[in-house]
Image 1 (tube, rainbow, N blue to C red):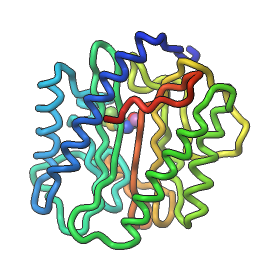
Image 2 (image 1 turned 60 degrees about the horizontal axis):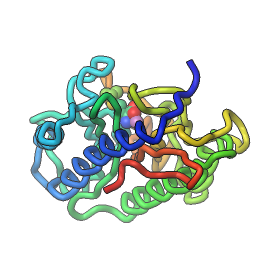
Image 3 (image 1 turned 135 degrees about the vertical axis):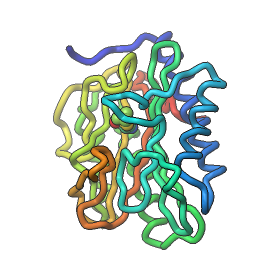
Length: 250
Ligand code: MF3
Ligand code: CO
């Protein structure tokens, strides 16, 4: 129980794990195009991961069937790759990926627009990514945990969008999900005090309309209850006395 504090050495391993995640996501961002199946993206992610001596983290996690999550338009998270599912012009594609390397987890997500995307999709992605960085700014020793979620929520709602409540960020290390849970909403000044050596994944899921979610009959895919768009950005970071260090960045 409790929050695992990582040593400098552990954080360096997590940096290597998360660099692999970042390389995979960067490659997927470059290759994703109209007509491609989400299964092809999944296979490419696995190939790059293996080449780097790491193992995909999500496959088999709580029974999740694939390595990558690909969530399109009204899908928020946990979209399952499929040969039958192809990327179409104007899609807002969220890619969530994790690996295990030398016993430690890396986890990150990006949203990408493919082809001619709508202004609202563009703005939703921009605000979601900005909100992630607003949250990261608050991840400093001496702040409270909820200062992160408060900063995310304020930025999102200030721009007319909403934050999903049913999924949250998390501590990360030797396990994908460690304590604490990191909500993307809340009052400031609540929860544990942040301290040097904590490693957390901050992952705002932001919706154009309602923040209420539905789970599809595949048991995984989370969609917006109103069918409007969602975007998702995630970084794994280390909280240090020198400020937040983003581990899942190239
Ligand atoms: N980034 C998501 C999370 O941290 C991805 C989990 S997908 C799962 O919860 F398949 F592993 F559950
Ligand atoms: Co995560």
